[in-house]
Image (tube, rainbow, N blue to C red; front, side, top):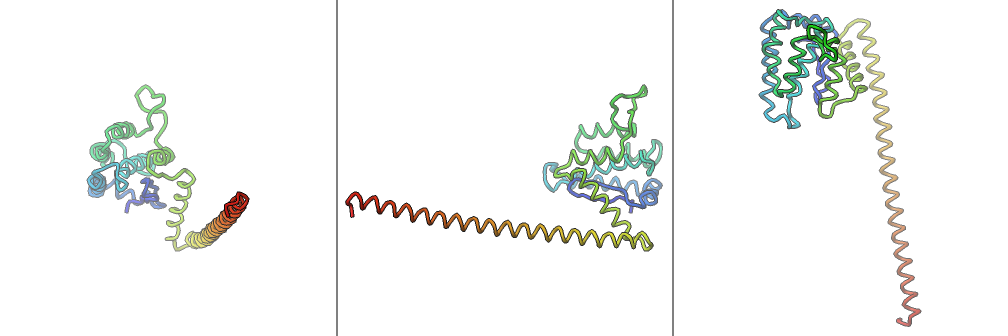
Amino acid sequence: MYGIRLIDPASGLLVPTWDFEDKARHLVSSTMHLHRITRILKSLVSLSPDPTSPLSVLHHVPSLILFLIAQHNSGRLNLAPGTLAGDELETRWNLCIRNRALREAISELVVTRLGMPESPTEDGRGSWKWTEAEYEAWVVSKARNAPDMKQVARLRQDADLEDMLLDEGEAGMYARAEKAERDRILAEENEAAERARTSAAEEAAKQKERQREDDTEEAKIRTAERVRTLGSDGEI
């Protein structure tokens, strides 16, 4: 509805869809939609009583807020102070972050709409903006089992391709052809990996059989040596 795609549930990584700017207009122009985002954030908090649980969805709350700030700084979304969306961001969304230290850090971004300053200017604002790259790096560094940056790039490509598949024109034809080729390559890679696993399993079984034969032969040798030793001692 709002042109936001979740491409990695484990980390909460979000990307804008190709029509994000058009769909985001609904978000910033209507209090109904803004309040819906607030309810979503509050629901994520209420559904995660234990932040250490593997099933916790608390990480989606700061992820969504930081994603929206990055879109504001890219010019795709207007969250300026004094606007409906900007006021909602400052007075409600940010308060949904349960972790106090994280909430205070993100509050700085919310107030200035800029990155945490390395060398602040005279008015206290940072010298660089919070960008999509900053957002993605944050997700990768904070989330459990987060993808690395190469995986992030691939997830973004997959999301873009899915969007293009909906196009009925030339772009859609290209996307469908590209998807078919990628599916073919992926199938070949999976087949090669399966062959490698099968080969490794067969080699392990052969190695185990050789070891068993070696152990049996060694046992025979020890038995024969014991028989010879006992015979030479006159015990037979």
